[in-house]
Amino acid sequence: MKEVLLQIRKLLAHKQIEEAHALAEQISDPYWRGYAFKWVAENLVIKDPKRAIKIAKKIEMETLKSETLLFLSYELAKVRKFKEAVEAAKLINNDYFRKKAFRGISNALAKAIMESSAKEVKLSEFNLGEEELQYLMPLPGNIRYKDGRFFIGTEIHRIKGETKLQIFVFENFKKRKKAKLKKKEDQDLKHISNYIERLILTGQLHEAEKLAKGVEDACASYLLEEIGITYINRGDIEKAKEILERLECADYLAAELVKFYLKRNDIEKAKKYAFRIFNPALKLSIAYSILLIDGIDEKFLREFFKDTTPYKLGRLLKFLAFELLEEAKKRNSSDLLKLSKNLFLLGKREHQKIY
Image (cartoon, rainbow, N blue to C red):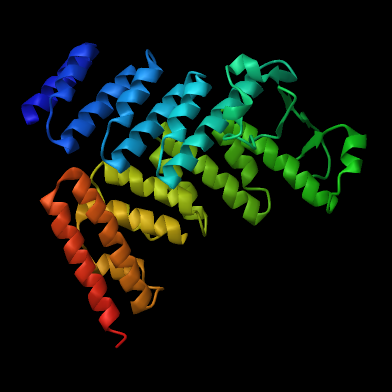
């Protein structure tokens, strides 16, 4: 099997995609065939998006399929093939990956709109219909959509004054007065946040980070987390970690760091950053990812879910066991089957503690 996979890699490196695809089709093991399909789809995505998506759909392992489709959607959005990017994202069954894909496409679309010199841009310029657009709304950066057109709703001016960051955003004054606004400070904060989001989308991370430090705590945390995630996507992990250390709660940034280290098989660092996650759904997803690679570490699991009762911990472990069972069936993996069984028994022991 190793020789076949190496041959596929070699063929793809030499741009012999048809030969690589044909060889991938001959692999009988669904697990390794899935990885071969993943590599072929990734190499085809820009040249032939529809075929790349079709190949990705044939991957039987749901997690791997979702990861591949997420990658395809990102790559297509980068080259402004938004219609195809949405098509790939819609096929993702994993809720977390699906939301992440649509957020990535939405950010790329917003960046493309803002890079236009016009104050309004037609939807048709991006080869998108309203059917696809519904998955991407609302767009970040204070971009509005109406009657087939995008409007950049603010003009940004630097001024001297008493605003906290010496930034003030002007819109049509009469239009603003009609809106039911809260305090003036709240409205100023909204405009400042929109401006910082624009900086993030256009890659001006240093400036965005500097400004985000000056806004209110809750808003600053959200903006800094977005900046940190963007640093990870750029490969600047140290900057992302610096930002995480400054934040009390940054679930998604911590989750991205966990995934980064899991891909590099650095389990200890992955576990370290897993403890920075408090969102229950994300904790469960990350626990599953760590189990797949590292197996059962009772000490880690008990510490990771320490805020739950034995009853709830037992239920969580059994749930994860059933998820692993499904994955074992898809991969036809005896190792995963054994892992699922042992995790189920661990959950059962936790349940027995309450009697």
